[in-house]
Length: 393
Ligand SMILES: Cc1cc2nc3c(=O)[nH]c(=O)nc-3n(C[C@H](O)[C@H](O)[C@H](O)COP(=O)(O)O)c2cc1C
Image (tube, rainbow, N blue to C red; front, top):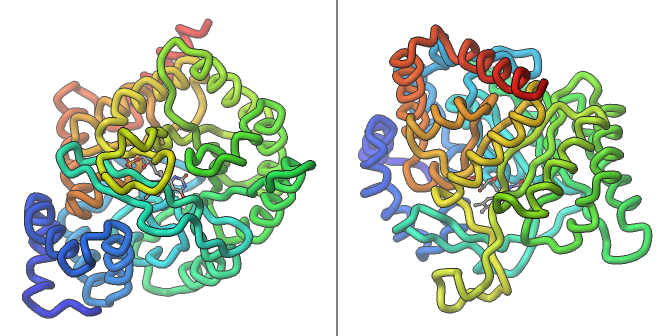
């Protein structure tokens, strides 16, 4: 599907005015795709292969936003804009080139070793009033070979005015049988060795709420071992683990800190906070939801995200923290940096507001930094880390 000139004009304007995306472009996409959020997402990713769309994104972001110098951070050996795509957004690396015109980094995946369809559809639902999504996708993936073909094409392409860093989300899947953890770690080893030459880093994702077998991996000894494996096969790369949300003052909160501690002890650099939160079927706002539960994402995650970022920053002042969970405006983004985030990433908010949202968020962060007297984002981050180190001693 290619855009005609009117559609191109509207798309261009929607980058400038995200409200136009929300009120006009998004409803159109839903109308054309049977109101199925997953079909809409796939159609939108396909559009990102259109050279006209790539060109529009390139021009728009070169004009309006290209990592304002005061927001640039150093991460994994590169100076980049601290805004990225969250895992699941581009599961198979189909749109790496187009998205690299917009984002400072991307987290494609979660990539698993062998192709798997995930759960039967429909398995994604929207909650427009709250700007949330519910999903029970169950790790659909085209598998490692397919993803690697996309990643190597991206690496070898000559288009790149400003390539974004690629932190690949991966997971070995434990079968429900004996030696399951060893099996999952073996898969991780294959994923790491084959992807490492082409990636800037990895995010291990043992926290998808829709895949029960992953709970076998959520033990300190497995976190330590996985971090060691990541260090062994990707020594020069960024190595993170994705964590789930938790309620305050619970065993879940304490366990979460212990898991992160084990991952850092094993040689990991930090965390991505937070994954979706599991909700039971009767709380999913769709009458015919076919699964016992769903992972909810979007704005409602804000308190979970902020709390987790604060907790991890206090406990581990030097850890890398990438924050996600409904980050939808400049003030919210700024507060997340103040809580201790190194960089931010998103999925759900971009499905509601389009890519123009990023320029809006970036301008907001720059505004609040200046209003509070910081020269740049790195100065704020240094101060937050210093405060956390003092509190820890
Ligand atoms: C449909 C959908 C699929 C997702 N798939 C993945 C995934 O494969 N791996 C992963 O680590 N997180 C996945 N996530 C979670 C997101 O990466 C992110 O952590 C979460 O949605 C919160 O951020 P957001 O509110 O910006 O979406 C998915 C989220 C959604 C909505």
